[in-house]
Image (cartoon, rainbow, N blue to C red; front, side, top):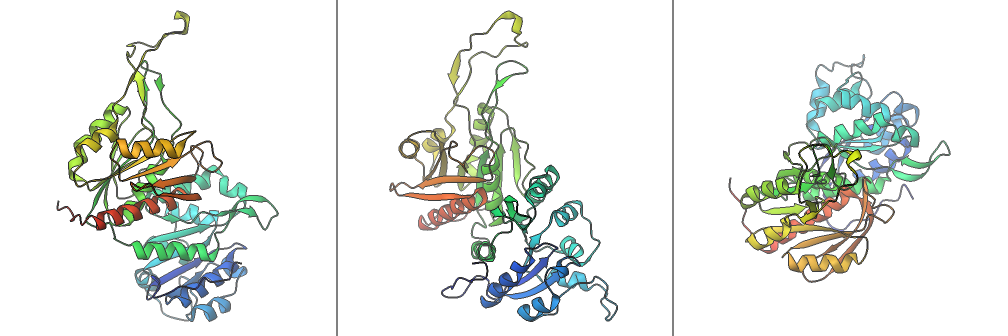
Length: 418
């Protein structure tokens, strides 16, 4: 049920936090009332900003009653002197939550438009921004909306993905705003984890490798790089210094992350080996090619010459090489298999001296290449297998970071000094 707040024990990570809650014009605006109640019950101070269209779906009086604060609506209201009040409010917040967020506000934020109070506050704030989109499925899946979200992610904006279900327009699909409990949980996790990787340096690999066959063709795989990029974003958000070694992808660079672009397995191996000594942990999320053509043609292979015979040779096993060199490092690997995934993952864990391995199967619905979700099994050296069920790749990234934090702490590894 949307309005049912979960009871928490002890002091909530939200206690004492100042949350600026933006509400835009969508039917899901009613959920913002329940979200405000959860925030307030857990000790947060909530200040609501309503857009003109948002106020058509939920009244300022309702939000003022729940937040126990004046509801912000106009950039320059006639009944009071405000001066640079929008700057003061933007600086006040520990977190800025937009729920619901329409396609319109996403486009405005991406373009830096500041034509009302909410968009002006967004462009003026340095607080972390959390966005819960809510809109019709076709609007959500529109290439412009998806591109806007991708750009905002690259700037460090946190997205709380919408659910799939029946929408107000009777369409069934993606676009239903995340439930208030889920949004609150994301904020709790953020504040609880804030800076728990500060002083650490994490190297993440992402994407496929392309092994050239001739000047225009290559052997590759379907990896989109999204999992590795989400891991880089999650580690950076938690205070780590992050190096991202990325194979070819179409993804924008994550905010605040050093990125090294490579194409082949050999180039990735060299880049990782060069930086290994300076990092605390390596997360190998890249789908590195196991084989490459033994001979690369200097000119394009012509169809008129007939089908070529291609001899393959193995590429370097990057994780195995790191396992032989590891001292105080944490090594995390991924095991992508279409059968016997847990068994093969456990073998890799042992043979490559890993601290953690993530097993997944791209044939499962919700774990496909290019998806924003994954279905994984997290396996540690004791053989304990923790299934995640279907979760977003960002949520899985945070679970992996949790394990890294725990292993760094339990091993008493001191923080590196640059």
